[in-house]
Length: 136
Image (cartoon, one colour):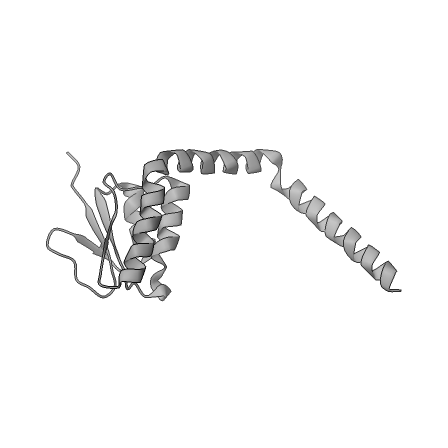
């Protein structure tokens, strides 16, 4: 039976007993990739350690979610409300969003991003050439 991991993302507030503490977004990602039961996001994480919303966006794109709905802890009402609203929007559609993100990535890879980039460069050069000609 797999160990139950309850992840506490906070660089200032100590975790309650039974929680695994991580103090930055990269460490949280690593543990989420290996599977966790739940995560509690602190409201005061120093942005030099990554941003909680960036972690949420990564979870949406990658599909690496905890088994249970994520929690938010702290005392800053505005930050907690923003995180809870983001979670309320993302949690019910998490699997659908991850599938759509993976499908978009596959489509980009199969369409040849280098061709798209080459076309963008050529278009930009054409626009610059036209503007330069008009200015002369």
